[in-house]
Length: 196
Image (cartoon, rainbow, N blue to C red; front, side):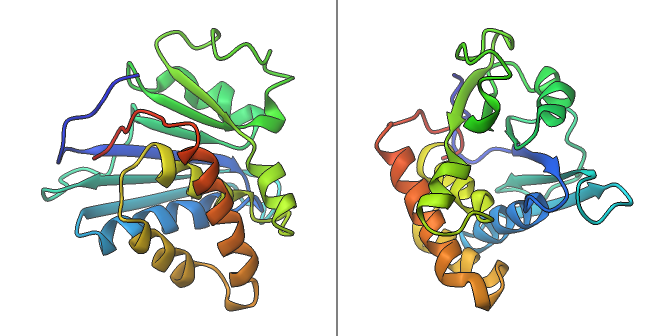
């Protein structure tokens, strides 16, 4: 797995279906990075369906002004669907990181990612973590916790503030619990940090 040098651009693509919280995940990542003092650009794309259609959210983080929001070869891909894996895993930057919900693992072969050579694959039990936290619809926040705990070094306080700012107040307690459990899950695995 590559290590991106300190204070450099990091591009993250979040992808899945409408209704899985992909757009909220991108917004939360961007908000946390802004709170930490980084420059951030976020774009999103989704089909005409409000739920069930393909959607994605791109976040670019840098310590310098961002001149282009284009994410052709993301450093990190977060995937919640088979379609997202098929479409975007092949365009990850060399040495990039793929975080995929482990509910996809069996259908994808579950072999640690040999299907994507040159890419580090981490199967995150985001849906199971969310269910254990009592928030089955908060897999996106469990994934956010895993991302912050293991791949993107941002101040956890900024990340927690971003969760508070980006999720509905009515579900804040459950989303916060899912975030915390995802964060702890990642800390216990001691990943290589991709974005200092």
